Image (cartoon, rainbow, N blue to C red; front, top):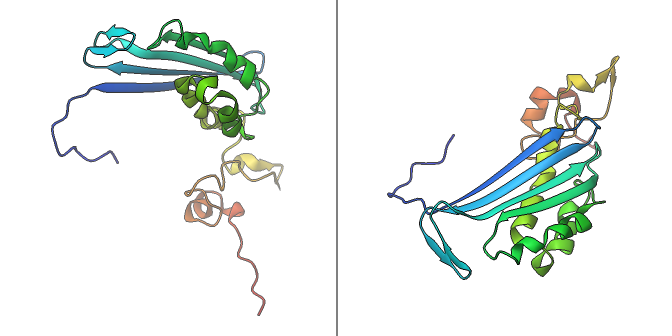
Length: 194
């Protein structure tokens, strides 16, 4: 289901694009390469000078290298286009210093804000980093982590429940989707004390 048809004619003025690509490395680690760009469709004058239509105002990259437990073992940031050249593009080393050692699934967003929010980081790189935990989960699904019920069987012995259960409204263990696709993991009602 798509968005509804706009009720008025519109003119595109700005495009923000975010792309995350996950790569399995031959050394067993994973690279999460994230990119964000902001492009105006009309000529724009910034405090630092004019930007022609179609020229990126932001063209930023962030790579996090993680192990199979989602521990960050390396980080790199790069700024190819920024609104304040010589200023915005000097913050990249902070991302390595502040992110290495964190785990994407254990308080990452909180720590990210504590370490790189406001004047300690780049608003756009920090915003980009915030989406990497769920991007990593999608990358690891069915590659590193089993996501279907059959994959939880090992010679007839159930393993732990699939990681994605109880992580969103559709996959709540007391819901219809779990009953249909993961029946053994349906939450059982507590016995009544009559």
